[in-house]
Length: 186
Image (cartoon, rainbow, N blue to C red; front, top):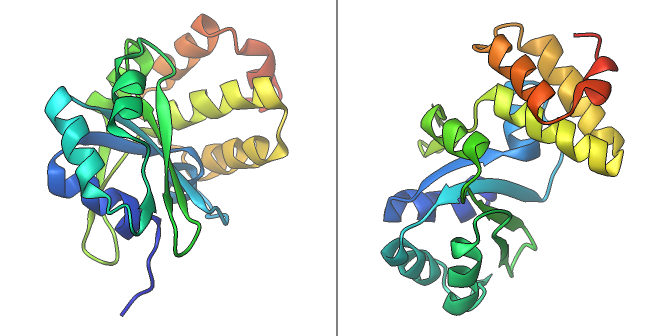
């Protein structure tokens, strides 16, 4: 039997309850390029009222830290930057769940998400690589963290087949990321 991992712990329950989600962050960049160790998974989701209730019930509180349903509801209703954490108590593995809200970039990425079946046979929906790069550029601008530089470089080296390079370049300009993008010489 395989040990618990980020997908089996956090993605499988979302699949069971039918949530529209996508994996982003380092797990997504690792899927598109070179894997690096992480103890969390970043997810972006769209939830209805009923799905929020089902999501809360999908994670057994004897095994997971799950915020109260009221907190999930408040975060879900934010027009931007709504999020909460789920933590598996036995391993310390964590999911950062962000809501798409009114963010057009997240909504577009959810429409273009990519389906992958993992080694356990679980369907996993991933954010498009362009979205992952854009968000990592934002995090790099805001934090200066070298891990984002390494992730972006690896994705650009491995993923020569970006589906929508013009979209990527347009969003870089829209989001004011030109100075950050210049360091990649792309």
